[in-house]
Length: 231
Picture 1: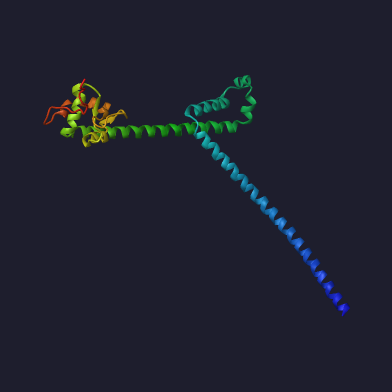
Picture 2: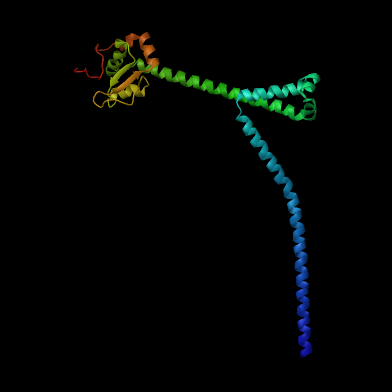
């Protein structure tokens, strides 16, 4: 019985030792596989980091003002096409030779970015001109379709040769002219009873001076809400 128990214990000990050796080999195998996976992942991470840095550099370059892009391009062009004599005098001949490909890339990128910037500026200028022309056309049509109440308000500006009138801002006719951008509130301080100062826009002023017949109507009076002083 004692021998049998001793044999079983020995077998258990051998099994335990075998398990330990197996686990150690497995761990070593996992370590090798992990190292292989890590070595294959590292180049990918490096490429991603380089791409992110390149994108960041391009975005920073896009923020540069056009004059800086032109200056950068002129410097790059000088380093590429400048005579050897001038480059050596400035002490940049070795730099120009060693980094010629990078300098050429800077030249191309700077002028491309400058061209893109100018193109965007031209598009924005064209859109602004178009928006201004459309707004002017709308106001022109609006001035050719004035109601009698609106004509009375605008007659004051032309009759008094002034660009400022005092009107009540809670009046629907006044707000209609404000919404049409024919007049606008020029002061925040005013009187609830008399009103606030409202100026005529430059476009409406010049257009009505050139076309005074637009103010002809059923009456010949003008309107202001400013009360005469008692003193």
